[in-house]
Image (cartoon, rainbow, N blue to C red; front, top):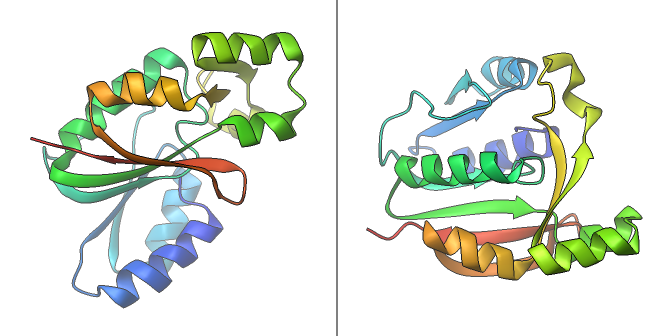
Length: 182
């Protein structure tokens, strides 16, 4: 989704630095999209369904940024979105995505048995997150956690893993840098 911090980032870094670039924003939260439409006239913004596919064209994007998306998807939904992001990214395109990794786990108060499960399976669904209850998503919006090995093994089926930077976003979420190779 597009949060206040990301709105400033879009304005300050993308549009001001590359004023001729095309910026597209999508989110399942129509309030965020409405704010962007009203305050970021240089971009194109649309509300989308929580489940892919999107109505966007194949190979449209050279850069895709997703902050706090894969931190909230069940494993089956994660793989659907990875496939969709592969479709949307241009050959050679770069994707910057965040996940809850071990830095988040250390701050979360997750019990030892669940940490063991995460370390064994590489992915942990920590349960419902109520932050988007107003969207009536049912059990879609979760708190999920990843190990770097899980990312390398599973995301590597879709993309080349360039780097995973622990705690990069707010000293909290890990940044996963991947590239779409033809």
